[in-house]
Amino acid sequence: MMIDFHTHIFPDKIAARSIEALSNVSGVKAATDGTLNGLLASMDRSGVDLSVIMPVVTKPTQFESVNTFAAKVNEQYTGRLLSFGGIHPDSEDYKSELNRIKELGLPGIKLHPDYQGVMIDDVRYMNIIEYADALGLVILVHAGIDIGLPEPVHCPPDKARKVLDTLKPKKLVLAHMGGWKQWDEVYEYLAGENVYLDTAFCFDYMTQDMFLKLCEKHGTDKILFATDSPWSDARKDMEVIKSLPLTDEAKEAIFSGNAKKLLNM
Image 1 (cartoon, one colour):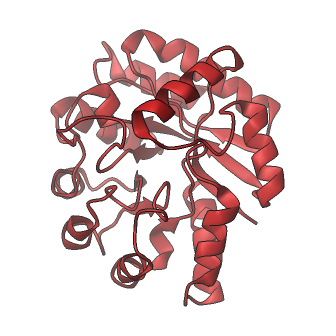
Image 2 (image 1 turned 180 degrees about the horizontal axis):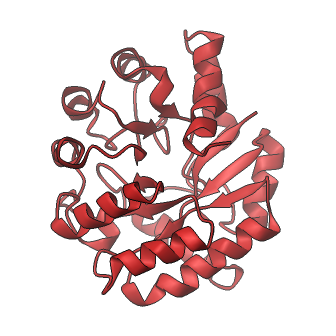
């Protein structure tokens, strides 16, 4: 089985405009058109069995629409697409909103400190992560540099380590191998700790030696295959992992085994 743990989709009516704007800012050409059907077509081409969708709530008023849409996706595409929920750190009642996400049957939440403009060790995020963890939700956080946004980096490895040491969350995922383009710091602060790392949008920017170095120190039992679709091509990323000098068991864990455990599949 092949699970892509980190993907994005846009509503059809704004997908083209959103992809164009983000491509212009980042200089990255999208691998799909950014729509739900575009993701499904990409999955068919590359052999991905299940894609996990990560919505981003960029302002508190989006909470209900984003999470209602996520629940509908899960209902309509069971076994093929699995959407997380989203929450903003400026939520007026984060516990009620996290309870709502749990009630909707969403398996986790996506936090994006750069788009949401809050440092990951801010008390607002700390409260959200602590309560989400108590509810048994998976928490995925954009970590490291965002290619389309200016500094500061809102989730650098040292601040992420502070969250780990303080809260000890059981199901925290730091995207982009723990911190995009900050992998030396990931190795120093995060490798070997009780946290999952995903491979989203990494293989065109990270050397294979660095990936293998992180695998050795962190363990392949806490690394998740992910693309950040539409910003990376699943088939190409799969071939990178298949070509690496890892055991078949390690590759299977990265491609699906670890995700199954995390999602209780």
